[in-house]
Amino acid sequence: MKVTKRVKEILSWYESDNAGTKANLARLLGTGKLGGTGKMVILPVDQGFEHGPARSFAPNPPAYDPMYHPQLAIDAGLNAYATPLGMMEAVADRVAGQIPLILKMNSANSLSRMKDQAVTATVNDALKLGCSAIGFTIYPGSDDCYNMMEEFRDLAEEAKSVGLAVVLWSYPRGGDLSKEGETAMDVCAYAAHMAALMGAHVIKVKLPSNYLEQPEAKKVYEKHGIDLSSQAKRVEHVMQSAFNGRRIVVFSGGATKGADSVFDDARAIRDGGGNGSIIGRNVFQRPREEAIAMLNKIVNIYLGKE
Image (cartoon, rainbow, N blue to C red; front, side, top):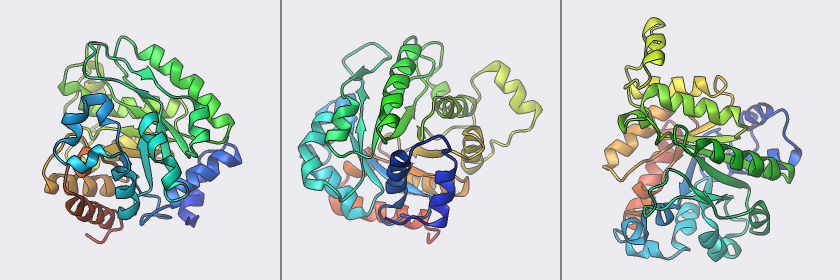
């Protein structure tokens, strides 16, 4: 684990946290090939819950094996691995101490019509399994968002009290939001800011488009000339919205797409001052060697080598 000057600077932004939580944040920031740089690449595997096993793993059948994923993250030198309870229980003993673990505490499923997620794990589960952090999703804009926020409040308070870090997926959807609005610039920045206000240590949002969803926000963006001209500039604005860059923000890899698009996203995140990527389907749905090569290139992009 590399606790560099840069990592110490980031830890200093979390003034109210106890030593245990800061130690776990240091583990997330100090592990793997990006350890000590302030950049992160995290492998999340909750898509089986969200989309079903065939949609998630049939493109690369070895990925049906729970151990496939953390081993991929370890071999690629990533910062952390995130997954729901059952998959974590299947692998935690075998990977103990090799990579920081993030227990995903709530999940949705594609069979339900609700824009909500069920809480499927406890803070005690995270402690028992040796996790460094808990992960949670909220859907700002949905009719159930206030309940999700209150669930997060309670779990985050408990997690912090026992020295765990807290990662919050902030994904606007539902309510009156259009599909295009889910990744609108004003909406993504708002989602990142809400996550920071709710006390998340690490914030996960989607990469924003240059579309503006909210009429009142659009007036402000246009009046003050907020630059939306490039993906890097849009990332920069999301970081500005996360306490002026004083919170760790990682960006979703999204649906499976071409390798060049994945690399372009990483460069934009780097150039915009983002902390990194949390990328799942775009790597684990590819053959292992191809996935390792892709992750190596993403890491090199964040290191400024490509």
